[in-house]
Image 1: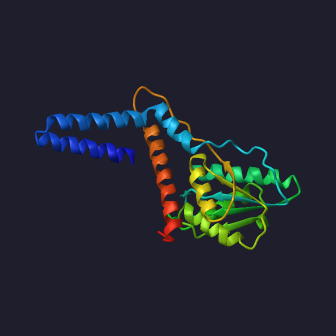
Image 2: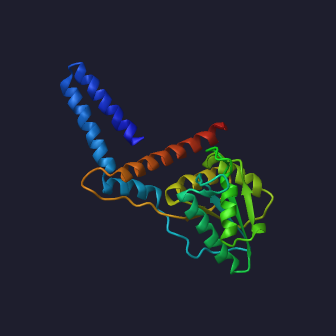
Length: 243
């Protein structure tokens, strides 16, 4: 999003120059360079990420009698026709869900995990199934794992998880996803009637340089995407539409 905006400014500046509107062209070009520098700098990027990542890791949550750990998918990577794994953020989410599960099991209370995610990328395997496989490899008992395999986005994660657990009396619902994705996820679940304990699986940190850093530009795009997703969630809840 940021790069598209900057590119648009450069194109506008080019055509303004062709139209012999030099002063306005220079101003638009300067605005594009300033935007690129600000988005690529460490301090601005770190601040924008901090607005999405105010959470601390729940190292020792308060477990109730009946607990559910909700873990959200983040795409899959197909290594071969036979092997699919979660992508980078999906791995951290799945391993954090497993860590919390084992911590919960030590208390002797009911502990389930629900892996949520369809196959929006068309890999041939749903995110939920991929995460379930990894969870089992990590030692999670298969009968303790639920799956939700229809969701195409975060809002649908919340809608579909609600349907799966509607008849189950979970007192405690811990939501595991990436730190930058947690604010949007928590809002989506709240809008669909599910109160959750937020559990960030990872945290993204900006890089400080004297020049624009590609990673920082990517992180700023992530921030823009998350806030756009929050607005979309409120729109979908208000209108009842689905897309």
